Image (cartoon, rainbow, N blue to C red):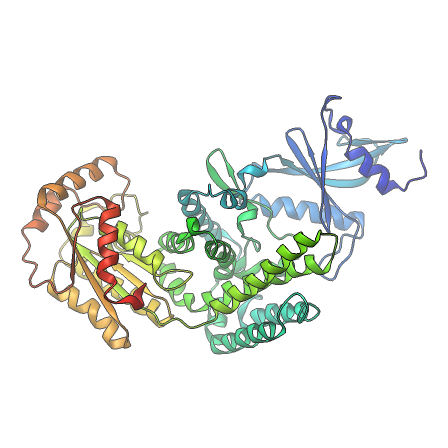
Length: 534
Protein backbone atom coordinates (compact mmCIF):
# COMPACT_ATOMS: atom_id res chain seq x y z
CA UNK A 1 0.00 0.00 0.00
CA UNK A 2 1.15 3.52 -0.72
CA UNK A 3 0.24 6.84 0.78
CA UNK A 4 -2.13 7.62 -2.04
CA UNK A 5 -5.89 7.62 -1.44
CA UNK A 6 -8.05 4.83 -2.76
CA UNK A 7 -9.29 6.82 -5.77
CA UNK A 8 -5.69 7.46 -6.93
CA UNK A 9 -4.84 3.80 -6.46
CA UNK A 10 -7.95 2.80 -8.39
CA UNK A 11 -7.15 5.15 -11.26
CA UNK A 12 -3.60 3.79 -11.43
CA UNK A 13 -4.99 0.25 -11.52
CA UNK A 14 -7.49 1.06 -14.27
CA UNK A 15 -4.73 2.64 -16.35
CA UNK A 16 -2.70 -0.58 -16.25
CA UNK A 17 -2.88 -3.09 -19.09
CA UNK A 18 -2.95 -5.97 -16.58
CA UNK A 19 -6.30 -4.83 -15.21
CA UNK A 20 -7.93 -5.96 -18.43
CA UNK A 21 -5.78 -8.98 -19.13
CA UNK A 22 -3.86 -7.21 -21.89
CA UNK A 23 -0.33 -8.08 -22.86
CA UNK A 24 2.66 -6.23 -21.43
CA UNK A 25 3.22 -4.35 -24.68
CA UNK A 26 -0.31 -2.94 -24.80
CA UNK A 27 -1.33 0.37 -23.31
CA UNK A 28 -4.48 1.87 -21.81
CA UNK A 29 -5.56 5.39 -22.69
CA UNK A 30 -7.43 7.49 -20.13
CA UNK A 31 -9.77 10.32 -21.18
CA UNK A 32 -11.01 12.64 -18.47
CA UNK A 33 -14.13 14.83 -18.49
CA UNK A 34 -15.72 16.96 -15.79
CA UNK A 35 -17.75 13.98 -14.55
CA UNK A 36 -16.00 10.79 -15.59
CA UNK A 37 -12.88 8.88 -16.58
CA UNK A 38 -12.94 6.73 -19.71
CA UNK A 39 -10.37 3.96 -20.13
CA UNK A 40 -9.70 2.63 -23.64
CA UNK A 41 -8.36 -0.90 -23.25
CA UNK A 42 -8.06 -3.29 -26.16
CA UNK A 43 -11.46 -3.83 -27.75
CA UNK A 44 -13.33 -2.32 -24.80
CA UNK A 45 -13.96 1.09 -23.26
CA UNK A 46 -14.82 1.51 -19.58
CA UNK A 47 -16.39 4.65 -18.13
CA UNK A 48 -16.08 5.41 -14.42
CA UNK A 49 -18.17 8.17 -12.85
CA UNK A 50 -16.23 10.62 -10.73
CA UNK A 51 -17.36 10.96 -7.09
CA UNK A 52 -18.55 14.54 -7.73
CA UNK A 53 -21.67 16.59 -7.10
CA UNK A 54 -22.81 19.52 -9.24
CA UNK A 55 -26.07 21.42 -9.50
CA UNK A 56 -27.04 19.23 -12.46
CA UNK A 57 -25.74 15.81 -11.32
CA UNK A 58 -24.89 13.90 -8.16
CA UNK A 59 -22.36 11.05 -8.26
CA UNK A 60 -21.25 11.58 -4.68
CA UNK A 61 -22.00 8.05 -3.39
CA UNK A 62 -21.24 4.56 -4.70
CA UNK A 63 -24.96 3.77 -4.83
CA UNK A 64 -25.66 6.85 -6.93
CA UNK A 65 -22.81 6.05 -9.28
CA UNK A 66 -24.08 2.49 -9.72
CA UNK A 67 -27.58 3.77 -10.49
CA UNK A 68 -26.15 6.30 -12.95
CA UNK A 69 -24.16 3.59 -14.73
CA UNK A 70 -27.19 1.33 -15.00
CA UNK A 71 -29.33 4.21 -16.25
CA UNK A 72 -26.72 5.14 -18.87
CA UNK A 73 -26.64 1.60 -20.23
CA UNK A 74 -30.44 1.30 -20.22
CA UNK A 75 -30.97 4.56 -22.11
CA UNK A 76 -28.18 4.13 -24.63
CA UNK A 77 -29.22 0.61 -25.50
CA UNK A 78 -32.25 2.20 -27.17
CA UNK A 79 -30.00 3.31 -30.03
CA UNK A 80 -26.69 1.47 -29.53
CA UNK A 81 -27.36 -1.97 -28.00
CA UNK A 82 -24.19 -3.45 -29.51
CA UNK A 83 -21.97 -0.74 -28.00
CA UNK A 84 -23.30 -0.62 -24.42
CA UNK A 85 -22.50 -4.04 -22.98
CA UNK A 86 -23.40 -3.59 -19.32
CA UNK A 87 -22.24 -2.47 -15.87
CA UNK A 88 -19.18 -4.13 -14.37
CA UNK A 89 -18.09 -3.86 -10.71
CA UNK A 90 -14.55 -3.16 -9.56
CA UNK A 91 -13.74 -5.11 -6.39
CA UNK A 92 -11.00 -4.99 -3.81
CA UNK A 93 -9.36 -8.27 -2.94
CA UNK A 94 -6.88 -7.74 -0.16
CA UNK A 95 -4.50 -5.04 -1.32
CA UNK A 96 -5.42 -5.50 -5.01
CA UNK A 97 -8.31 -4.54 -7.28
CA UNK A 98 -10.05 -6.76 -9.82
CA UNK A 99 -12.62 -6.00 -12.53
CA UNK A 100 -15.71 -8.20 -12.35
CA UNK A 101 -16.10 -11.42 -10.45
CA UNK A 102 -18.18 -12.22 -7.36
CA UNK A 103 -15.62 -12.04 -4.57
CA UNK A 104 -14.42 -8.99 -2.73
CA UNK A 105 -15.87 -5.63 -1.71
CA UNK A 106 -17.28 -3.53 -4.57
CA UNK A 107 -15.46 -0.18 -4.61
CA UNK A 108 -16.65 1.18 -7.97
CA UNK A 109 -18.79 0.50 -11.04
CA UNK A 110 -17.86 0.84 -14.71
CA UNK A 111 -19.97 1.17 -17.84
CA UNK A 112 -18.51 -1.41 -20.20
CA UNK A 113 -18.69 -0.58 -23.90
CA UNK A 114 -17.47 -1.94 -27.19
CA UNK A 115 -14.65 0.31 -28.28
CA UNK A 116 -14.82 2.18 -31.57
CA UNK A 117 -12.39 4.55 -33.22
CA UNK A 118 -12.82 8.32 -33.31
CA UNK A 119 -12.32 8.30 -37.09
CA UNK A 120 -15.88 7.06 -37.52
CA UNK A 121 -17.50 9.91 -35.63
CA UNK A 122 -19.70 11.99 -37.90
CA UNK A 123 -18.12 15.13 -36.43
CA UNK A 124 -14.67 13.88 -37.45
CA UNK A 125 -15.90 12.94 -40.91
CA UNK A 126 -17.48 16.38 -41.31
CA UNK A 127 -14.25 18.12 -40.33
CA UNK A 128 -12.34 16.05 -42.88
CA UNK A 129 -14.86 16.73 -45.62
CA UNK A 130 -15.76 13.03 -45.70
CA UNK A 131 -19.30 13.10 -44.28
CA UNK A 132 -21.56 11.33 -46.75
CA UNK A 133 -25.07 12.65 -47.34
CA UNK A 134 -26.44 9.10 -47.40
CA UNK A 135 -25.25 8.60 -43.81
CA UNK A 136 -26.99 11.81 -42.73
CA UNK A 137 -30.22 10.74 -44.41
CA UNK A 138 -30.05 7.29 -42.80
CA UNK A 139 -29.42 8.95 -39.45
CA UNK A 140 -32.45 11.21 -39.87
CA UNK A 141 -34.65 8.21 -40.63
CA UNK A 142 -33.27 6.41 -37.57
CA UNK A 143 -34.04 9.44 -35.41
CA UNK A 144 -37.66 9.43 -36.59
CA UNK A 145 -37.96 5.74 -35.68
CA UNK A 146 -36.31 6.37 -32.30
CA UNK A 147 -38.68 9.25 -31.52
CA UNK A 148 -41.69 7.13 -32.43
CA UNK A 149 -40.76 4.54 -29.78
CA UNK A 150 -39.53 6.97 -27.10
CA UNK A 151 -41.44 7.20 -23.82
CA UNK A 152 -44.05 9.98 -23.79
CA UNK A 153 -43.41 12.39 -20.88
CA UNK A 154 -46.30 14.90 -20.73
CA UNK A 155 -45.18 16.41 -17.41
CA UNK A 156 -42.19 18.04 -19.11
CA UNK A 157 -41.60 20.42 -22.01
CA UNK A 158 -44.17 22.91 -23.24
CA UNK A 159 -43.79 26.67 -22.99
CA UNK A 160 -42.67 26.51 -19.36
CA UNK A 161 -39.97 23.96 -20.17
CA UNK A 162 -38.59 26.07 -23.03
CA UNK A 163 -38.65 29.19 -20.87
CA UNK A 164 -36.58 27.41 -18.20
CA UNK A 165 -33.96 26.41 -20.78
CA UNK A 166 -33.72 29.96 -22.16
CA UNK A 167 -33.55 31.43 -18.66
CA UNK A 168 -30.85 28.95 -17.66
CA UNK A 169 -28.77 29.81 -20.70
CA UNK A 170 -29.17 33.53 -19.99
CA UNK A 171 -27.97 32.99 -16.44
CA UNK A 172 -25.02 30.90 -17.62
CA UNK A 173 -23.98 33.61 -20.08
CA UNK A 174 -23.98 36.46 -17.54
CA UNK A 175 -20.31 36.03 -16.54
CA UNK A 176 -19.40 35.59 -20.22
CA UNK A 177 -21.19 38.68 -21.51
CA UNK A 178 -18.86 41.59 -22.21
CA UNK A 179 -15.79 39.36 -22.10
CA UNK A 180 -15.96 36.31 -24.35
CA UNK A 181 -19.43 37.06 -25.74
CA UNK A 182 -20.90 40.36 -26.90
CA UNK A 183 -23.20 41.61 -24.12
CA UNK A 184 -25.77 43.17 -26.49
CA UNK A 185 -26.02 39.97 -28.55
CA UNK A 186 -26.51 37.93 -25.38
CA UNK A 187 -29.34 40.27 -24.37
CA UNK A 188 -30.94 40.20 -27.83
CA UNK A 189 -30.90 36.43 -28.23
CA UNK A 190 -32.56 36.05 -24.84
CA UNK A 191 -35.22 38.70 -25.49
CA UNK A 192 -36.04 37.35 -28.95
CA UNK A 193 -36.22 33.77 -27.66
CA UNK A 194 -38.55 34.78 -24.85
CA UNK A 195 -40.77 36.62 -27.35
CA UNK A 196 -40.98 33.54 -29.58
CA UNK A 197 -41.87 31.33 -26.62
CA UNK A 198 -44.67 33.73 -25.71
CA UNK A 199 -45.89 33.85 -29.32
CA UNK A 200 -45.90 30.06 -29.67
CA UNK A 201 -46.89 29.15 -26.10
CA UNK A 202 -50.16 27.56 -27.21
CA UNK A 203 -48.39 25.42 -29.84
CA UNK A 204 -45.67 24.37 -27.39
CA UNK A 205 -48.26 23.29 -24.83
CA UNK A 206 -50.43 21.64 -27.47
CA UNK A 207 -47.50 19.49 -28.60
CA UNK A 208 -46.77 18.53 -24.99
CA UNK A 209 -50.38 17.44 -24.45
CA UNK A 210 -50.43 15.58 -27.77
CA UNK A 211 -47.47 13.41 -26.76
CA UNK A 212 -44.61 14.99 -28.69
CA UNK A 213 -42.56 15.63 -25.55
CA UNK A 214 -40.73 12.36 -25.01
CA UNK A 215 -37.66 10.87 -23.36
CA UNK A 216 -35.31 11.71 -26.20
CA UNK A 217 -31.56 11.55 -26.66
CA UNK A 218 -30.97 15.14 -25.59
CA UNK A 219 -27.50 15.61 -27.09
CA UNK A 220 -27.96 14.72 -30.75
CA UNK A 221 -25.00 16.37 -32.43
CA UNK A 222 -22.53 14.85 -34.90
CA UNK A 223 -20.03 14.07 -32.13
CA UNK A 224 -22.45 11.55 -30.63
CA UNK A 225 -22.96 9.51 -33.80
CA UNK A 226 -20.43 7.03 -35.16
CA UNK A 227 -20.32 4.81 -38.22
CA UNK A 228 -20.42 1.09 -37.41
CA UNK A 229 -20.20 -1.36 -40.32
CA UNK A 230 -21.30 1.37 -42.71
CA UNK A 231 -24.27 2.61 -40.70
CA UNK A 232 -24.67 5.57 -38.31
CA UNK A 233 -25.15 4.62 -34.65
CA UNK A 234 -26.32 7.14 -32.03
CA UNK A 235 -24.67 6.92 -28.60
CA UNK A 236 -23.94 8.92 -25.41
CA UNK A 237 -27.38 10.32 -24.65
CA UNK A 238 -28.00 12.53 -21.61
CA UNK A 239 -28.32 10.16 -18.66
CA UNK A 240 -27.38 12.26 -15.63
CA UNK A 241 -30.59 14.35 -15.59
CA UNK A 242 -33.68 12.99 -17.33
CA UNK A 243 -35.26 16.45 -17.32
CA UNK A 244 -32.74 17.57 -19.95
CA UNK A 245 -33.77 14.75 -22.29
CA UNK A 246 -37.54 14.86 -21.73
CA UNK A 247 -38.10 17.36 -24.50
CA UNK A 248 -40.05 18.01 -27.67
CA UNK A 249 -38.89 15.64 -30.42
CA UNK A 250 -38.32 18.65 -32.67
CA UNK A 251 -35.99 20.16 -30.06
CA UNK A 252 -34.09 16.86 -30.04
CA UNK A 253 -33.81 16.88 -33.85
CA UNK A 254 -32.84 20.56 -33.77
CA UNK A 255 -29.37 19.77 -32.37
CA UNK A 256 -28.50 17.73 -35.47
CA UNK A 257 -29.96 20.38 -37.78
CA UNK A 258 -28.07 23.14 -35.95
CA UNK A 259 -24.78 21.25 -36.11
CA UNK A 260 -25.13 20.62 -39.85
CA UNK A 261 -26.35 24.13 -40.70
CA UNK A 262 -23.71 25.84 -38.54
CA UNK A 263 -20.89 23.85 -40.10
CA UNK A 264 -22.26 24.64 -43.57
CA UNK A 265 -21.78 28.35 -42.84
CA UNK A 266 -18.03 27.84 -43.25
CA UNK A 267 -17.92 24.57 -45.22
CA UNK A 268 -19.69 24.54 -48.59
CA UNK A 269 -19.34 20.75 -48.73
CA UNK A 270 -22.12 20.52 -46.12
CA UNK A 271 -24.45 22.96 -47.86
CA UNK A 272 -28.00 21.60 -47.89
CA UNK A 273 -27.28 18.72 -45.49
CA UNK A 274 -29.56 20.18 -42.80
CA UNK A 275 -32.44 20.51 -45.27
CA UNK A 276 -31.99 16.93 -46.48
CA UNK A 277 -31.91 15.68 -42.88
CA UNK A 278 -35.09 17.58 -42.03
CA UNK A 279 -36.96 16.34 -45.10
CA UNK A 280 -35.83 12.74 -44.57
CA UNK A 281 -37.09 12.95 -40.98
CA UNK A 282 -40.43 14.29 -42.25
CA UNK A 283 -40.67 11.65 -44.98
CA UNK A 284 -40.18 8.95 -42.31
CA UNK A 285 -43.30 10.01 -40.39
CA UNK A 286 -46.69 8.31 -40.60
CA UNK A 287 -49.95 9.82 -41.76
CA UNK A 288 -51.05 10.63 -38.20
CA UNK A 289 -47.69 12.30 -37.45
CA UNK A 290 -46.98 14.43 -40.49
CA UNK A 291 -49.46 17.29 -40.06
CA UNK A 292 -48.57 17.96 -36.39
CA UNK A 293 -44.88 17.78 -37.29
CA UNK A 294 -45.18 20.30 -40.10
CA UNK A 295 -47.28 22.60 -37.93
CA UNK A 296 -44.59 22.27 -35.28
CA UNK A 297 -41.95 23.57 -37.70
CA UNK A 298 -42.97 27.05 -36.57
CA UNK A 299 -40.87 26.23 -33.49
CA UNK A 300 -37.79 25.15 -35.41
CA UNK A 301 -36.04 28.56 -35.58
CA UNK A 302 -36.43 28.88 -31.81
CA UNK A 303 -35.25 25.33 -31.13
CA UNK A 304 -32.23 25.59 -33.44
CA UNK A 305 -31.31 28.95 -31.91
CA UNK A 306 -31.56 27.48 -28.39
CA UNK A 307 -29.18 24.68 -29.42
CA UNK A 308 -26.72 27.20 -30.88
CA UNK A 309 -26.83 29.20 -27.64
CA UNK A 310 -25.98 26.07 -25.67
CA UNK A 311 -22.95 25.55 -27.90
CA UNK A 312 -22.00 29.23 -27.58
CA UNK A 313 -21.98 29.20 -23.79
CA UNK A 314 -20.23 25.81 -23.48
CA UNK A 315 -17.50 26.91 -25.89
CA UNK A 316 -17.17 30.29 -24.16
CA UNK A 317 -16.76 28.61 -20.75
CA UNK A 318 -13.79 26.69 -22.16
CA UNK A 319 -12.12 30.05 -22.86
CA UNK A 320 -12.87 31.38 -19.38
CA UNK A 321 -11.69 28.15 -17.82
CA UNK A 322 -8.12 28.65 -19.00
CA UNK A 323 -5.66 25.85 -19.51
CA UNK A 324 -5.46 26.51 -23.25
CA UNK A 325 -2.78 28.12 -25.36
CA UNK A 326 -3.43 31.68 -26.51
CA UNK A 327 -4.10 30.42 -30.03
CA UNK A 328 -6.55 27.82 -28.74
CA UNK A 329 -8.32 30.43 -26.60
CA UNK A 330 -8.70 32.69 -29.62
CA UNK A 331 -10.13 29.84 -31.67
CA UNK A 332 -12.62 28.96 -28.94
CA UNK A 333 -13.58 32.61 -28.52
CA UNK A 334 -14.27 33.05 -32.22
CA UNK A 335 -16.27 29.84 -32.37
CA UNK A 336 -18.37 30.80 -29.34
CA UNK A 337 -19.14 34.15 -30.96
CA UNK A 338 -19.97 32.44 -34.26
CA UNK A 339 -22.46 30.18 -32.47
CA UNK A 340 -24.12 33.21 -30.87
CA UNK A 341 -24.29 34.99 -34.24
CA UNK A 342 -25.87 31.87 -35.75
CA UNK A 343 -28.40 31.74 -32.92
CA UNK A 344 -29.43 35.31 -33.70
CA UNK A 345 -29.56 34.59 -37.41
CA UNK A 346 -32.01 31.75 -36.80
CA UNK A 347 -34.36 34.13 -34.99
CA UNK A 348 -34.55 36.49 -37.95
CA UNK A 349 -37.81 36.10 -39.87
CA UNK A 350 -37.42 34.96 -43.49
CA UNK A 351 -40.51 35.33 -45.73
CA UNK A 352 -41.62 31.85 -46.84
CA UNK A 353 -41.59 31.00 -50.55
CA UNK A 354 -43.55 28.49 -52.63
CA UNK A 355 -42.05 26.69 -55.61
CA UNK A 356 -43.72 23.95 -57.68
CA UNK A 357 -41.78 21.49 -59.81
CA UNK A 358 -43.77 19.52 -62.39
CA UNK A 359 -43.15 17.24 -65.32
CA UNK A 360 -43.87 13.77 -66.62
CA UNK A 361 -42.25 10.70 -65.11
CA UNK A 362 -38.55 10.49 -65.88
CA UNK A 363 -37.90 14.21 -66.14
CA UNK A 364 -35.96 14.13 -62.85
CA UNK A 365 -38.28 16.56 -61.10
CA UNK A 366 -37.78 15.01 -57.66
CA UNK A 367 -34.00 15.25 -57.96
CA UNK A 368 -34.34 18.91 -58.94
CA UNK A 369 -36.92 19.59 -56.23
CA UNK A 370 -34.65 18.14 -53.52
CA UNK A 371 -31.78 20.35 -54.58
CA UNK A 372 -33.94 23.45 -54.80
CA UNK A 373 -35.38 22.74 -51.33
CA UNK A 374 -31.84 22.55 -49.98
CA UNK A 375 -31.08 25.99 -51.46
CA UNK A 376 -34.29 27.78 -50.50
CA UNK A 377 -35.60 29.14 -47.23
CA UNK A 378 -32.44 29.94 -45.30
CA UNK A 379 -30.11 27.74 -43.25
CA UNK A 380 -32.64 24.92 -42.80
CA UNK A 381 -33.92 24.88 -46.37
CA UNK A 382 -37.50 24.34 -47.52
CA UNK A 383 -40.01 21.58 -46.90
CA UNK A 384 -40.03 19.22 -49.88
CA UNK A 385 -43.47 17.71 -50.49
CA UNK A 386 -43.35 14.86 -53.02
CA UNK A 387 -46.63 13.40 -54.26
CA UNK A 388 -45.18 9.86 -54.49
CA UNK A 389 -44.28 9.85 -50.79
CA UNK A 390 -47.57 11.51 -49.80
CA UNK A 391 -49.52 8.79 -51.62
CA UNK A 392 -47.55 6.03 -49.89
CA UNK A 393 -47.94 7.66 -46.50
CA UNK A 394 -51.71 7.86 -47.04
CA UNK A 395 -51.77 4.10 -47.70
CA UNK A 396 -49.52 3.28 -44.75
CA UNK A 397 -46.44 2.01 -46.57
CA UNK A 398 -42.81 3.11 -46.63
CA UNK A 399 -41.29 5.29 -49.37
CA UNK A 400 -39.73 2.33 -51.21
CA UNK A 401 -42.64 -0.09 -50.77
CA UNK A 402 -44.83 -0.77 -53.81
CA UNK A 403 -48.47 0.25 -53.62
CA UNK A 404 -51.48 -1.94 -54.51
CA UNK A 405 -53.62 -1.11 -57.52
CA UNK A 406 -56.32 0.60 -55.46
CA UNK A 407 -53.82 3.31 -54.55
CA UNK A 408 -54.13 4.50 -58.16
CA UNK A 409 -57.90 4.11 -58.45
CA UNK A 410 -59.98 7.01 -59.85
CA UNK A 411 -60.21 9.84 -57.35
CA UNK A 412 -57.09 8.89 -55.38
CA UNK A 413 -54.92 11.28 -57.34
CA UNK A 414 -57.19 14.18 -56.42
CA UNK A 415 -56.88 13.21 -52.75
CA UNK A 416 -53.08 13.13 -53.03
CA UNK A 417 -52.97 16.62 -54.54
CA UNK A 418 -55.41 17.89 -51.92
CA UNK A 419 -53.21 16.46 -49.14
CA UNK A 420 -50.10 17.99 -50.69
CA UNK A 421 -51.76 21.42 -50.83
CA UNK A 422 -52.96 21.06 -47.25
CA UNK A 423 -49.48 20.21 -45.98
CA UNK A 424 -47.98 23.02 -48.05
CA UNK A 425 -50.43 25.50 -46.57
CA UNK A 426 -49.57 24.28 -43.05
CA UNK A 427 -45.84 24.62 -43.71
CA UNK A 428 -46.22 28.11 -45.19
CA UNK A 429 -48.31 29.14 -42.17
CA UNK A 430 -45.48 27.82 -39.99
CA UNK A 431 -43.10 30.19 -41.77
CA UNK A 432 -41.34 27.50 -43.83
CA UNK A 433 -40.65 27.73 -47.54
CA UNK A 434 -42.10 24.85 -49.57
CA UNK A 435 -41.18 22.99 -52.74
CA UNK A 436 -44.02 20.87 -54.12
CA UNK A 437 -43.11 18.02 -56.45
CA UNK A 438 -45.67 16.21 -58.62
CA UNK A 439 -46.57 15.59 -62.26
CA UNK A 440 -49.02 18.54 -62.30
CA UNK A 441 -50.30 17.34 -65.67
CA UNK A 442 -53.70 19.02 -65.37
CA UNK A 443 -54.18 22.74 -65.67
CA UNK A 444 -56.42 22.83 -62.60
CA UNK A 445 -53.70 21.12 -60.52
CA UNK A 446 -51.23 23.81 -61.47
CA UNK A 447 -53.69 26.63 -60.81
CA UNK A 448 -54.63 25.19 -57.41
CA UNK A 449 -51.04 25.18 -56.13
CA UNK A 450 -50.50 28.71 -57.47
CA UNK A 451 -53.55 29.89 -55.52
CA UNK A 452 -51.88 28.82 -52.26
CA UNK A 453 -49.29 31.54 -52.68
CA UNK A 454 -51.77 34.20 -53.75
CA UNK A 455 -53.99 33.43 -50.74
CA UNK A 456 -51.00 33.78 -48.44
CA UNK A 457 -49.72 36.88 -50.23
CA UNK A 458 -46.33 35.43 -51.13
CA UNK A 459 -44.34 34.92 -54.31
CA UNK A 460 -44.68 31.77 -56.41
CA UNK A 461 -42.51 30.12 -59.04
CA UNK A 462 -43.48 27.13 -61.17
CA UNK A 463 -41.02 24.98 -63.14
CA UNK A 464 -42.06 22.54 -65.87
CA UNK A 465 -39.41 19.94 -66.73
CA UNK A 466 -39.56 18.33 -70.16
CA UNK A 467 -37.52 15.92 -72.29
CA UNK A 468 -38.07 13.76 -75.43
CA UNK A 469 -40.25 10.68 -74.94
CA UNK A 470 -37.36 8.35 -75.82
CA UNK A 471 -35.22 9.84 -73.04
CA UNK A 472 -38.04 9.58 -70.49
CA UNK A 473 -38.83 5.97 -71.39
CA UNK A 474 -35.19 4.94 -71.02
CA UNK A 475 -34.91 6.60 -67.59
CA UNK A 476 -38.19 5.17 -66.28
CA UNK A 477 -37.29 1.66 -67.44
CA UNK A 478 -33.95 1.88 -65.62
CA UNK A 479 -35.59 3.26 -62.49
CA UNK A 480 -38.25 0.55 -62.54
CA UNK A 481 -35.58 -2.13 -62.82
CA UNK A 482 -33.52 -0.74 -59.92
CA UNK A 483 -36.54 -0.35 -57.59
CA UNK A 484 -34.81 2.24 -55.39
CA UNK A 485 -37.12 5.19 -56.01
CA UNK A 486 -40.40 6.09 -54.26
CA UNK A 487 -42.11 6.48 -57.65
CA UNK A 488 -44.13 3.48 -58.80
CA UNK A 489 -44.56 4.93 -62.28
CA UNK A 490 -43.26 2.50 -64.90
CA UNK A 491 -43.06 2.63 -68.67
CA UNK A 492 -46.78 1.91 -69.12
CA UNK A 493 -47.70 4.80 -66.82
CA UNK A 494 -45.34 7.10 -68.72
CA UNK A 495 -46.93 6.16 -72.04
CA UNK A 496 -50.33 7.12 -70.67
CA UNK A 497 -48.89 10.44 -69.46
CA UNK A 498 -47.46 11.15 -72.91
CA UNK A 499 -51.00 11.05 -74.28
CA UNK A 500 -52.30 13.64 -71.77
CA UNK A 501 -53.66 16.97 -72.93
CA UNK A 502 -51.44 19.17 -70.75
CA UNK A 503 -53.23 22.39 -71.64
CA UNK A 504 -51.35 25.65 -71.64
CA UNK A 505 -48.13 25.42 -69.59
CA UNK A 506 -47.41 28.85 -68.14
CA UNK A 507 -44.67 27.75 -65.77
CA UNK A 508 -41.02 28.23 -66.75
CA UNK A 509 -40.04 25.42 -69.10
CA UNK A 510 -36.80 23.61 -68.26
CA UNK A 511 -34.94 21.31 -70.65
CA UNK A 512 -34.43 18.09 -68.68
CA UNK A 513 -32.89 16.00 -71.44
CA UNK A 514 -29.34 16.28 -70.11
CA UNK A 515 -27.62 15.07 -66.96
CA UNK A 516 -29.14 15.78 -63.52
CA UNK A 517 -26.47 18.41 -62.96
CA UNK A 518 -27.32 20.14 -66.24
CA UNK A 519 -31.04 20.02 -65.49
CA UNK A 520 -30.51 21.51 -62.04
CA UNK A 521 -28.39 24.31 -63.49
CA UNK A 522 -31.16 25.15 -65.97
CA UNK A 523 -33.80 25.05 -63.23
CA UNK A 524 -31.79 27.39 -61.03
CA UNK A 525 -31.28 29.69 -63.99
CA UNK A 526 -35.04 29.78 -64.53
CA UNK A 527 -35.55 30.65 -60.87
CA UNK A 528 -32.95 33.39 -61.13
CA UNK A 529 -35.69 35.55 -62.64
CA UNK A 530 -37.12 35.59 -59.10
CA UNK A 531 -33.91 35.99 -57.02
CA UNK A 532 -35.78 36.21 -53.73
CA UNK A 533 -36.23 32.46 -53.93
CA UNK A 534 -32.53 31.62 -53.71
